[in-house]
Image 1 (cartoon, rainbow, N blue to C red):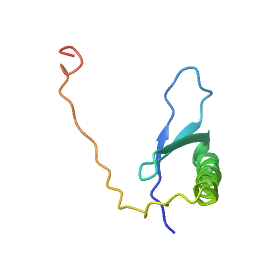
Image 2 (cartoon, helix red, strand yellow):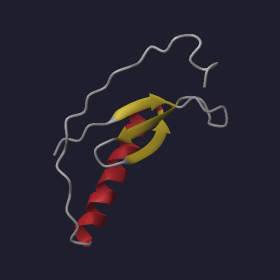
Image 3 (tube, helix red, strand yellow):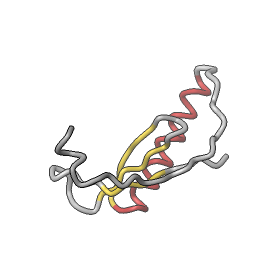
Length: 82
């Protein structure tokens, strides 16, 4: 089973530097870890626990979905008008 994971550098000033979020959009899960490899290990552990919990409760496991990623360029005044 392949599951799409999106990694994002944590920008929160209350977090130590070097941490990354790991988002699994198809399952609605997010975790974090130190560096990409730490985040990858954390999300692998989280997904395995989540799947085990679903299985133990005879709940359906959604099929992996295609993940598309894009960015949006906002005009400079976008935050001023919000």
